[in-house]
Amino acid sequence: MAYDENNVFAKMLRGEIPCHKLYEDENTLAFLDIMPRSEGHTLVITKEKSRDLFDISPEALAKLMTVVQTLAPKIQKAVGADGVLIQQFNGAAAGQTVFHLHVHIMPRKEGEPLKPHAGKMEDQAKLAATADKIRKTLPSA
Image 1: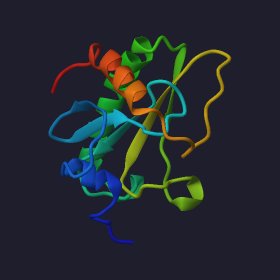
Image 2: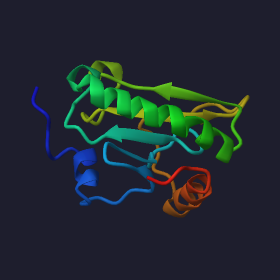
Image 3: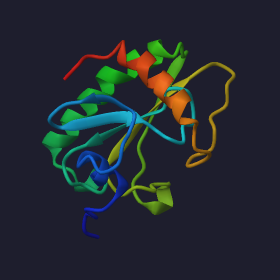
Image 4: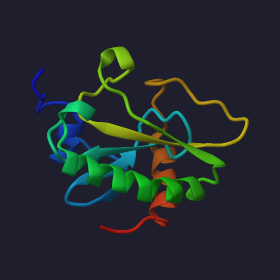
């Protein structure tokens, strides 16, 4: 399948849809998931037009994962989590709902269950407060 220029993440990259942006550089964008599975649930997307892991150039994948590796421990610390789950889906059968390559960073607290995937929309004020807390710990581009 061809890359869909009108997917929600492509629209975010073009500034057509707002997001709670945490970090951006010339290759990636990181923002809070609007249906978080845990406090601080962040999505890191590539700016390369790629549907999934099998559609991205090795160079762009390396840049994406470098950002994931850099941000994950900072997000974990910002929300006081005990660990962090890194997750990435490829294809609808695997749970992918937006067909633009993205990686989930989900801070985990001991004994606290994850909320369902693609579950309930979070209150925007709560997301904004979480984003502010996390941004204080992150590098600027």
